[in-house]
Length: 323
Image (cartoon, rainbow, N blue to C red):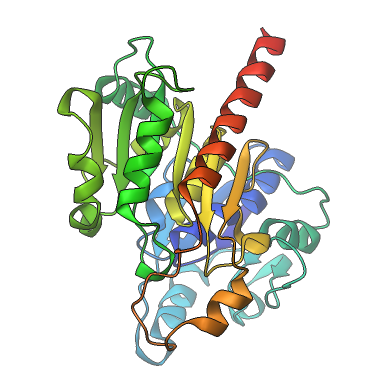
């Protein structure tokens, strides 16, 4: 059997879409998989079982990327074609079963919508597949010392939903200081290659012997392997937040001018902490549609730290039960 899986350009949406891919990989063991997606998201699919190809689809003028995709796959027979971008491509390719996402359903989380699309409720949790090579590299970056690991994503692709650096600094201190829930933790700071400057105040606030950082210097699958080891991930609504949730680590996602009901970290140990203001109130009160203002003002440090402490404690209790 062969599967053509067409998914998002954006990292976060691509991670969420792995819920669907996981369903087909687990339902049809040995199914051969071709993934078509944007270049930024492509690396997270490199470990998919029985992967044949990843087709990168950078946007081109007049829909040229769709024409290029069609040419590259039209000579194959596809037992299943999944198109999560709602294009017409699935209908003009030779295949047996076609699953096409018609549009967003704003009444449910995006993963739940995808589950309904394939007739699986509750839906599988998203999953990013990694191998021993990535886990070995994570061990090199973060040698096991018995200290907790806090991973922090202090950046995002939009200033509006980026929590203030000074609040991240305070939250890290309140989580890792003497007598705190993650006392003495190693802090790993993560972000995109172009976001290190944005994160600089947070990076510099942590002693060198207590911190590590990855800003485009490692593969996304290595980042995933690092996230697997975390006692807590704390970060803005971003693709990295969704990766953290998919890794299974306790994840706190910070929300303001984005809808947590659609994009909260979707996992057993994923939690959204949003501003005191609702999404609608934030949008109604911003300066303008094109404004570059920060819209996370009404998210206090105390609210985030309280949620983080409770999540870590709950996770530890569950681990003790499992042991």
